[in-house]
Image (cartoon, rainbow, N blue to C red; front, side, top):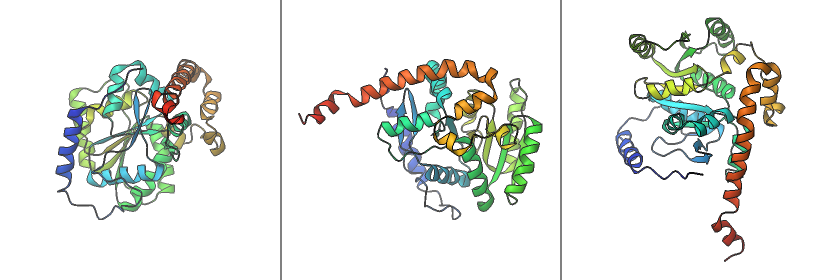
Length: 300
């Protein structure tokens, strides 16, 4: 397995960014509790060739809200087995994940891997939970939200539910996108529309890896926190059933989804789950039986 060495250029740029941020005023609307300081690098755990952010749910949400108050251009990827295998197989997509500001462990297999690698208190940071938590906090902290992607019918159903559950949520816009790539003019108009809306959070539903690539391409252009939520939109709209909590905690949500959409998912799962299991096993064996650990076990 290829070992990724630290990038000195990235380290220098992080130091420079921290020096700039030190002179920015702190937002009075964001509590320091359950957040990570913007001056600190987020803790990560390497799974296969991807760095997954090792934050529990509340600190992760607090950090995102801190970014949103500052209208920082950030990209948050919500990772599962499919996404990590895409990263493993495709170097260009791996660079997309490396560029992301936060990569949350959506799937329970990722959470289990992180725990086995030493992050014992890691919990799941999943798309639906992210959507609901951030909508609640945005409604309380006067942060505008922008919904991008999916279909108009799904967005309309989402709006109805959002208005019922979060009556004070300020929805800047809900905009579907065409299946074709946007022209340069259309893309620029979209960026301007997001800026004009004043949104601090942009929720995307374009599917993996399209939404992750879109966020990477627009880092530094869209002055808001972009969060790729994949299939959370139709689930929240009520068009797909959300697995019961015990099913999600048992790591069987993939099976629950497969029963709902066998034709669409059987190919993806058969191609991604077995190799992920084998590669994860190899990584765990390398981790637990490394020379340093063996010598430590025998106190040599």
